[in-house]
Image (cartoon, rainbow, N blue to C red; front, side, top):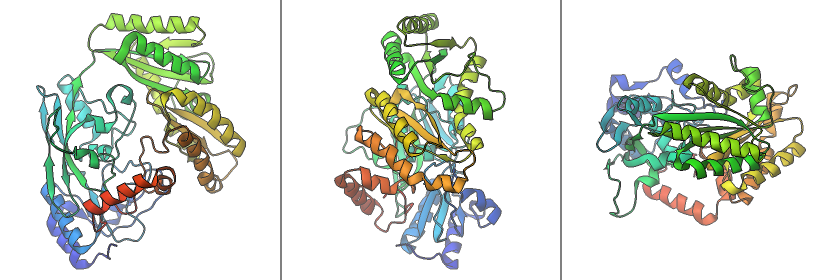
Length: 473
């Protein structure tokens, strides 16, 4: 149980980070206290912006001794309310934004060591400058920070080939709840010396420790890219196309995204300068990308072969292969414009679920009629990372229905969709995490032994419960 923050404690915290490292200005605080989706409005008496790991340590040592809660924040792009304080006003907001140095980039080791406050896009750019690739890629990459990406185990569009955020980490630097610093910044590809402790903090949403730096994996930068927007008759055909692509070009399949008719129609209606690459709107689309470091002609032939054979088997209705980088970007603007198009169209009920690849068509076949029967007025918008089993099965506000009444249906609809996904050995939280929004779902859908073990880890690493309380566990 955390306590109220006294004036004396605020002065200690101010001294710990120096004059440039704090603010109590309401205008400065305002955008940092509202979560990305506008669900949670937090309150805090002070924002702390430490400039180094040692300052983070000082802050946590003070708060630990005083039983004061600390909410770590990166770019505040959490979609589950994980990065803002609660409404009581007794929690300190700790931003890592000033800790934004790239400490090292090793071409020989294929590693990049970065502080938690580095913007994801800046890390991608640093790797590109050395003709290397840092493959973590998601819509918020221009504002999200790598510390937040790692603490939530971010996914994105290239998980199919490179894995989630946790798969891209070799080492971490973490500050524990009591202020102790763990320097685990090892750039080793093999290290079996005991438990892999870094995995405790990756995906823990700042509840076990605060990530201050990381050693990240880099990869050879692909020199050849083939992008195609494909019309398929159904989800079964989409999965068959994925299998055919992998059989033909192997690991060159980098992205494989699904969009339904509603996704395309919303983007064409709501996002300026988006053009339909086809003569009409279809029910099911796949946006796929193949990449390779060499053999560009073979890659192009492989894609053409797969599409021609799939067309002959009735698994593809139509397809457009991008003839330039600009056309490829136009295709990706359609996919990446879906969330914005949904926001412009009205309120949304967002789901982030995953199921085994083999059961994705079954999930869509069950979830769509079940939701349509329960809420026939709502618009179902289904899209996502088909290649790794992660779908965003969303509903948009019916025109003529007010947003508050629409959102009131949320618990019922979420439960309906989550029940189907979990029954199919899937997850109710594929890439967005648990945060504040899905705490009860964690208890409902995960075995008691798992939840109890999480609670034991929390109490061991954060015995006073000061790290991001009210989130996850």
